[in-house]
Image (spheres, rainbow, N blue to C red):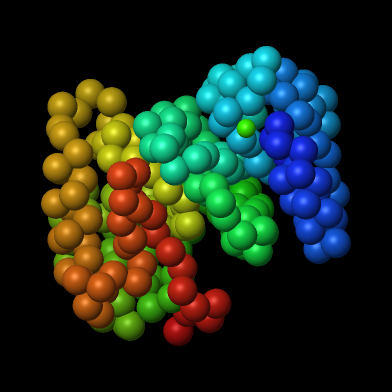
Length: 230
Ligand code: CA
């Protein structure tokens, strides 16, 4: 884990906790050192504060992403909502708002590491099994608890995309680009409507979703609940 954070007390408590949980930790105290460490040490994951001396976290995020697919978690203050959105659009995978618990950070790190190894293994045509859902990208069909669900093409594409990237937050703009394509002139409303339709099809209670979650002020993510799909 590469930790880039200029608050030394936070940095040392995070690295202590992560090391005692079996992670190898490298630290950097400013943006430029963080970028260099990301390039030279090839970490499996980067935890990146946004407010940093020498080079701000957004710039570090942009430059790291230009060269590598390494998962990035950004750390933001509550007042930096805009930066959070920009960070995700620059390619960060997840974010935590300060103050956060180290246990929460560890859980997010594990989830992203699991996902990045899964992604390396999974082919685009492989069936996706998540909890009570079974997605078949080749036949473009979805089954829930063994029963087929009818979906419009974009509902299917959106569900597949989110299901392949579980636990990762996406802004509406990112979803428009990745699912509808850059040439599509839609608004975030298009995404909201499709999410609502999907919730009606895959959630037990669409008003209390357990899988397709809204991240307020940011976007959406798909959460895997159980470890053993039926
Ligand atoms: Ca800072």
